[in-house]
Length: 370
Ligand SMILES: *Cc1c(COP(=O)(O)O)cnc(C)c1O
Image 1 (cartoon, rainbow, N blue to C red):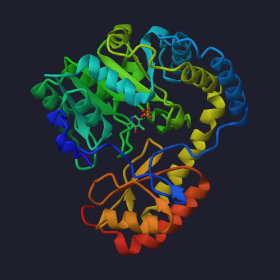
Image 2: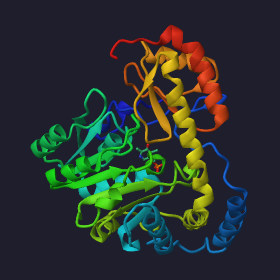
Image 3: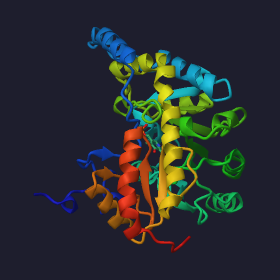
């Protein structure tokens, strides 16, 4: 067996571990924030047809610019985001992770720096490393909110080329105030990326950063079909920004990066948007049910605008994680001392989770740090 150390690997990648939630067998897998509801039958039927149709053309390269798909995504954002979005403002790729990688390829890279406010999405620093972009940890307050003045000061001091804000934040769940986003935009000369993977789950009255796009050419809002749309297997993420940002990304994207099958499937899914998003309210109801049940077990949570909840406190979170897994419930240990993260899904999943947690909580909870 050749060891990694024996390969001429880039020095900044040495000693790193690949991203990955453990894909363990468990009766209830509540660790990767997927939507567990089955896809609507009409969508599955239409997918059979549209993919069959696209297959007839598989001898040809796909539309390199995914024009029709970007128009459909722009229409969805215009309908739901609170601001008109033109197709020229939209770019799509294989998951928002690829979108973010392309953003860093265009605006980060060697000799450049990205800053994000941790704890946040662990892929942001990993994509930074992969693109040769230096990473700086910005900080959150003890309650996981971003202190706007401190964040602005940090950005002004570090002058990063790319700033990441995840809203609603993963793994903590809370949406970031638009005032904070606007202040960070003013504070940076670089590109400000707002990762809105969970936007559709936000509590009523939580505006999207899409509404800040007019007049802010360095603002990028990224979205995905992996979460609320329930199509994690499709691999379709997208961004909205000034058309010039889309032009910049064309400089680094691989030609034909988005297969004809992906484009066809995504367009078909978007034609069923209302049916797909019909499960969002049900998931939010399960989220709110979990949040409401925690105090009765002597536990607490961070306010959630997402389809997951960060809950605690535990004396030893990895031990509590193991005890839940022993009861068939797989949650996520995100490495925050005292906390675990659970995905909200179906009512049956909530029942199983709350039952297991009720058994586990007495031996594992702690009030330390409250
Ligand atoms: C899940 C998630 C994504 C989604 O990535 P895809 O590549 O679109 O599946 C992006 N950002 C955050 C914060 C996430 O939690």
